[in-house]
Image (cartoon, rainbow, N blue to C red; front, side, top):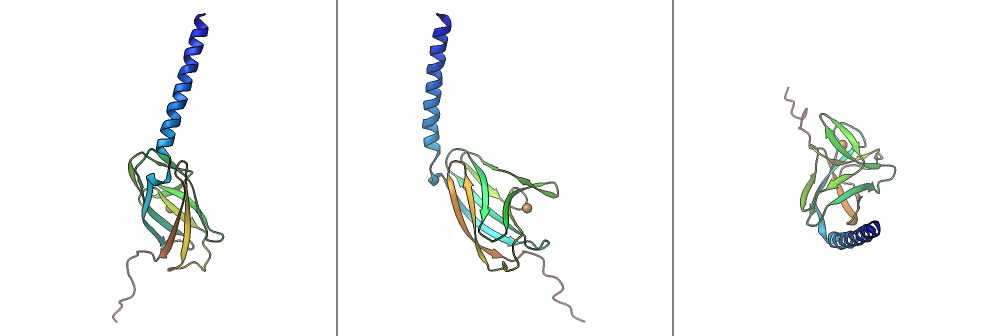
Length: 158
Ligand SMILES: [Cu+2]
């Protein structure tokens, strides 16, 4: 008797948890929650065929996960990087907290494009595709900028 009642209660609880989760999930999904601006791509001053993409992710809704990044540059691969001290290491995903403003930039997590062909230079335009777990796919057209390096060796007066 007792076990049956407990089972029934836990079943009810499970159903109500399930329903609540469904309601929450439907509230939190929808592409309108996430908007992206401040898109910029800079050619690496140090490594050939490398560019860093920086963006701002504005999330008005519930938490999400950036789970994949792709680029349409032939032969190139895009990945998530994070700074660990002086080094950049690969990351599989990036957490996007609820109601947050997440900046992907040089000093923190960012998007790295590697193995770009020589034909891709400053002024080239390409697409980066972001895949969010809940908010779906976002396509970003990006013009490639030159590296913001210090001007040097151009002003020799002998
Ligand atoms: Cu990097």
